Length: 256
Ligand code: NAP
Image (cartoon, rainbow, N blue to C red; front, side, top):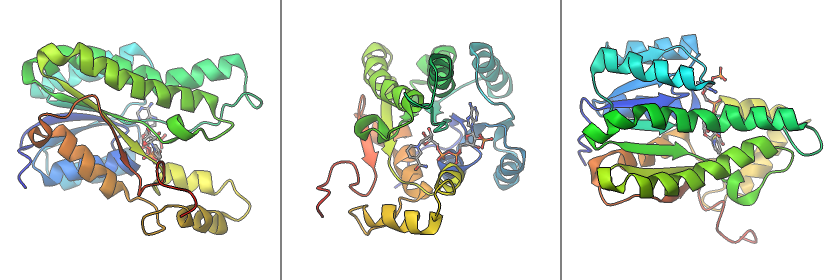
């Protein structure tokens, strides 16, 4: 299936590693131009080498509205257009009710949610011109809870709500907005989280065994495949949807 993504300029926050990295690679395979917004020097450079000049790496950790504004200006200066936005960067930073403070909570929400809004806000005029698409990467924790991570989960839930809100607001411009909801994907973030358990190997086996389809983790490439489809014109009548790519983890019977 030709997704017709050739030459499309797509912004990906956290696009150097993990899920964002797989989306960037998938876009390169489709002939698109990924803009990788991510502080990771080495992984960003590897993607640039792979891209043979058809990608941009903006070495930045998004935090403030000004960060997002300058990213959008940089992209417009280089390419003059934006065809898609993947809001993906996030960190499960473990700020809970008992192990956090109100200040930590607000910081975590801002870190995980603020730049989703800021990038969409500043990219909007360009997305209107291209009738582009927005994809928000959320998390199953927004639906199931996880415990001890109020800030991250509040942000992930808000991303699902904003997906519907923006889908409605942007109907007149034919800008589609969807959310992709992963559950268990072995990325660098996941690897460092699993190391926090006394027996990481046993914990990983335990979690994998609970994934209904094939008792395994979802791969970042499986997430990327759905992301590319949702960004493409092949998904031209899909908007406001929360799509779970999780081997049935969130919705199927736990007794399976
Ligand atoms: P990851 O392995 O940590 O990769 C994320 C990348 O984003 C890293 O390169 C990270 O750089 C960068 N990054 C983090 N915050 C950033 C910011 N503010 N601005 C720019 N770049 C930033 O994470 P992942 O597991 O691929 O997660 C990607 C998304 O999927 C997140 O929104 C996460 O909530 C969601 N998700 C993941 C899973 C899973 O099982 N992995 C499950 C559900 C949802 P540093 O490493 O330097 O911080």
